[in-house]
Image 1 (cartoon, rainbow, N blue to C red):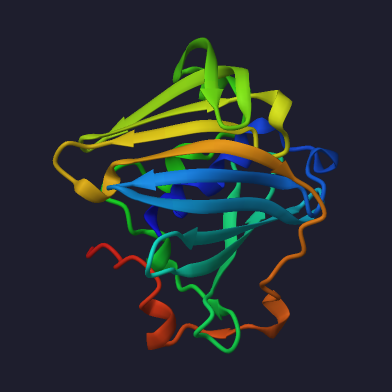
Image 2: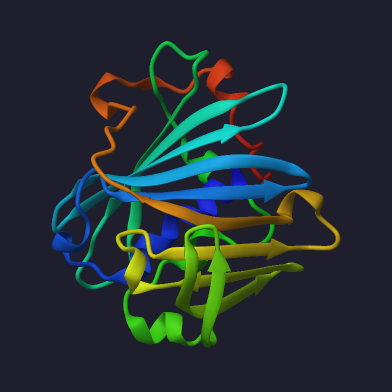
Amino acid sequence: MKTLIILMAFTAQLGFAADVFESGSGSEFSMKSNGISSKLNIYITESSFTRLGIEYYFETSGFIQKKMWQQFILGIHNDGPLSVEAAYVKTPELKKAEQLTSEYLNVNKGVKLEQFFFSNKSQIDKFKVGSENIEVPAGNLQATHYQKKNNGQVVDFWISDKVKPIGLVKLSSKNPKVMEQNYEIELVSLLVNVKATIDPKNSGPLTDEGKKALAIPLKK
C-alpha cells in the first residue's frame, strides 16, 4: 500500500526519545481514496532507544472487504535520521506474516518514504506552512500544517502534540495525473492497549501470495 509506506514516517518527526512511544498506543483514522472509504489504525509495537516498531491495520468498507496488516521496524540513530530495519505484511489469506524485500519499500513515484525521515526539528520546519485549526472526526484541533511535493504529487499534512504518539491529525495527497495518489486521511480517535497482529519471530519469506497484497515495485 503506497499510502502506508508514506504514513509510517510521521512518528519519526515527533521526537526520538523512547519514552514518547508507548507500546500499544496509536491512532485510528478514516481514509477516503477514489470514492472508497477505509479504516486505518496505526500503533506502536515496540520502543527502545535504538528501535521503534509500528504496525498498520487497513480495512476497506463496502460489499468486498479487504484487510491487511503491515509492520515496520525502524532503527534510531543519534547521528542521523531513522532507517527501515525490517518490514512485514499479513493478510487473512496468509498463514503467517511475510517479510518484505527491499524493492517493496520503493513503490511510489511521487513523494518518497525517505522524504519524511527527519533527524531534527529544523529539517521538517523547512516545509512548515503555518498553524491552523483543523476539523476532523476526532474534533477541532490546533495543528501545524506542512507540505511536501514531488513529481506532481502534493502532500499536505497536519501534526499536533495533542494526539501523541502518532501525531498525525490529517493528511491530504493530490496528483491530477495519478489517480492512486489522491486520498485523504483524518484522525478519528486515539488507541490504547492494542496488541500487535504480526510477530516478526514467526514470519516467513515473501511469497507470490504476499506480493499480491502489495503495490508493484518501481523499475530501476
